[in-house]
Image (cartoon, rainbow, N blue to C red; front, side):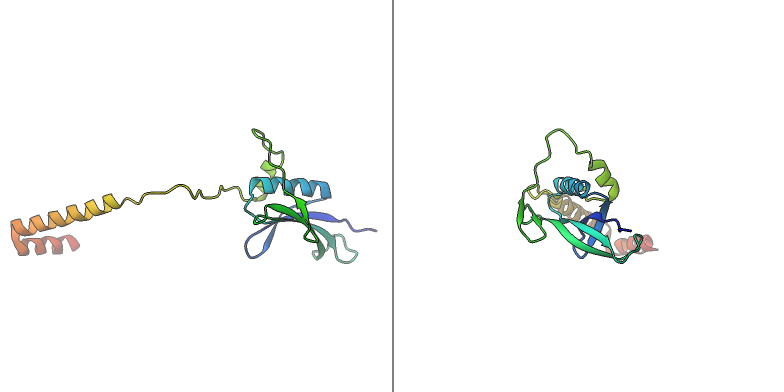
Amino acid sequence: MTTPVRFAVQRSDRTRWKTVLVEATEAGAIAVFHDMVRVNRRGYFRVVRLSPRGEDPNSAEFDWRLLMLYDPKKATVLDANGNDIGAVPAAPSGSRGSGTAALRAAGAATKSPPRTGERVRAPLQLYLSTIVIGTVIAAGLYLAFGRQYLLSMVTEFTR
């Protein structure tokens, strides 16, 4: 009896590889791999061939062999020997891949990367005006009613 060979598509989680999908065919795994790279060009992805150890097809231990790796720094797909296979083709405009919904359900990263060109203005004017207004009110109360009245208000307020 021959043990079934499976193909896993994995994504990097900075410290370890997480399996996104396990396919029975190599062509299916490679198609999902290309879809994942199109969805998230900043992540590391790989396709691995899984062969169960021993004769038990339900074994939890696998021997694995790297088939393909996507390196976002080089923006290219590498084979097991590190040779450049080529860039991943761009997704057709206006269409969504058939595997996109499956990838989202499987846990692929779907968040858009932060935009570096956008600058968010801190509300410094609001902060400064609040501090100035509070200081002016406190100074006005001090000048109008004196120190004793202001201290009695503060102690009554903090009770």
